Length: 148
Image 1 (cartoon, rainbow, N blue to C red):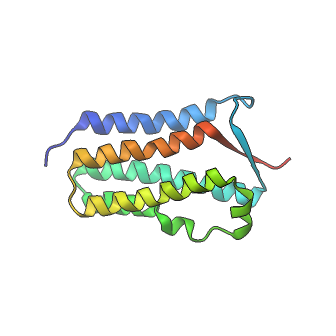
Image 2 (image 1 turned 180 degrees about the vertical axis):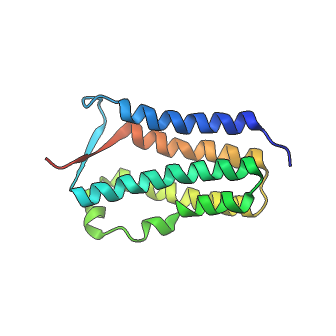
């Protein structure tokens, strides 16, 4: 297997910068606030953390040559995560937010399949990079807040 540490490192830096940039945004930053009750807010934020952990697991697995570990990490953020969403949370989220979330979950499932089917590491990293545009798009457009 040919390793491309610079690509893996670059993807890791993108993930790190997403986490730090989102936390640094001022409250009047122009994003649409998604005001949720405490339980729903906790669920959405946990889902986002799980996605970020999955990205880290994918990168760690690929870097170590552990394709099954990378595929498992991708699967954890797949559609299985979305199936338990309470109906009240679905109605509380903006339609575009929900669609972006579903597209992201499907993308993680597709990534897991591609990894298991032996797709080349360069293509996997390209897919992951493209897939992360869902994450950056969501964090650019929305911010999850508590109801006041």
